[in-house]
Length: 108
Image 1 (spheres, helix red, strand yellow):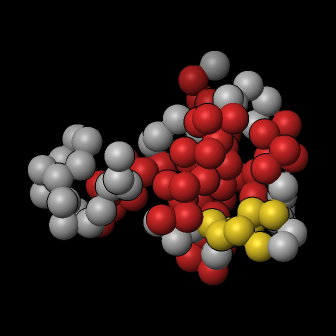
Image 2 (image 1 turned 120 degrees about the vertical axis):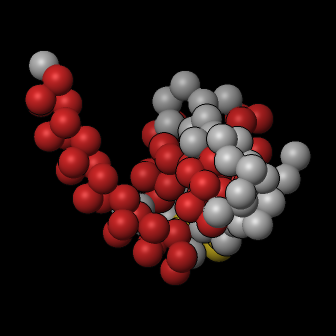
């Protein structure tokens, strides 16, 4: 299976709009969790698995492959880390996280 790509139909959109391809990619099981864990710096496979708690090694391997193909993470001597694009993405996502906390309070 290949990653969602701009210009191609993706889950929820036949337009292939870049934002829809990104949401499709990030909506895959554990994708956001992996990016979030790597936002604090590089991690080995085993440390990433430990931090992602219940993730299976197979799913972790597939997501690492997906995120590498999407140029959001890369393998280094220190383990896996965010690329510059991955770091830029986390900067954009942090306000979403803050908004989600406020939203969660409103729903209580």
